[in-house]
View: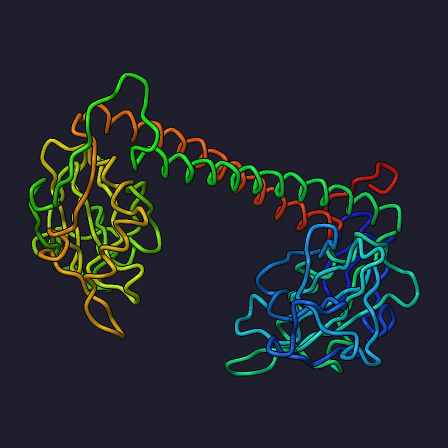
Length: 427
């Protein structure tokens, strides 16, 4: 049963005062260029929007006050139409279903000149049905995404033809409500952008702090003793992880680290686990001790080989195969988790990597790594404590960012379907 004030349509229930229009009624399709990235130039006068950048760099809008695109020369412009504020540029090809018909709205072009390029549709509102600022959000709404997915064709690359796209139906709220929705969502986007900038700023500060504190370039108050040069072999002992096949990674409830997760999930120290093994699998895995340093023993490139993380937990956990474990003596392992991923140490590890398609590094090679570290363990702990607190601050911001993004997703579900109305006289 449809609630009062709403109506059933082909795309679902929407408010009674919303219209339903198809793409053919709303948009004119304009010509787009076909230049590849190889055709672009650094000193051209025309900015060029490539479909790959729609997939990877922008969400909902492309604000030309914030971004500078690759360029083409004036000679390459030919008769291609220049973009205008409010235009929708849609990627017409995607390697996965998530990216089918991903769209962005053009904003703040002012005096800049730009065109839409390879594998894109350029859509321009021909009857002024949708206000600027609202178009990018409605083009990315679930009500449209469901239709795009249903019309998509392809095996390895998916897309929707122009003919099929013309039949896609768009819910069109009254313009006053479009403005209210656009304002609410853009305000949330601004909060997301500000959090992302703050996280990037704090990460840059952390990187600079690491460069100063982990090299001795800057000393903390109260410490003046010399740093000593050692090999890892003299600072602890090495062992190897074992067992844990891919199909065993979620066989139980005992925490476990697999070597690939060192590359994809962790930095400096282990914060969480994604693999949990059974008691049977545990019998063939390597038990960890608090303070162990885990190196990835295999990787795809020499530059990344031997990435490591410190295990600073007080609970039982295990390591799978292709992990080299270093158990330091009288050394702050959290300090080593930060230090052993610094560029100078990474260069040493890269020089010791063996292989091409798959690169390996052995315990004996890692044992020869030379380090220069504070002799006083209290200085090590003070340094790692500062970096750890920086990480906690960054993690708190990331948690907040995730929550705001979840709120934004919920807002889009509610506002772009009309389930929640922002204007009292429309409820």
